[in-house]
Image (cartoon, rainbow, N blue to C red; front, side):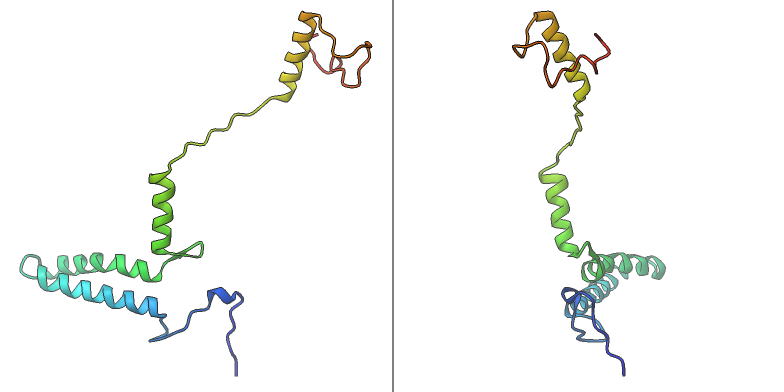
Length: 135
């Protein structure tokens, strides 16, 4: 006899009906109800092939809500997170690099032009005259 054990305890879902969780079962029932309602409402207006496609397209959102998980989030949690990140608080991130070598050389040139000395003696431990090629 073999017993299945989930590796992650948080991913455990109890099967209620036909191997579906309660969430999947409820959304499956909702999808079926929407498909039946669309069928009876639109039957006088469309042919059987078009009507079947309309019923499928009407039921798909409920099936998606019941069965899809993305990054551990249910569909409605993902939709709320997407709306918050893309619509409510859109941010344009820009990358502005800092060239430390160039800044070091600019500081050295400014010090040379102004005649300023950082230390009393001529020798300094961070003398950058050896590394700047603009000298």
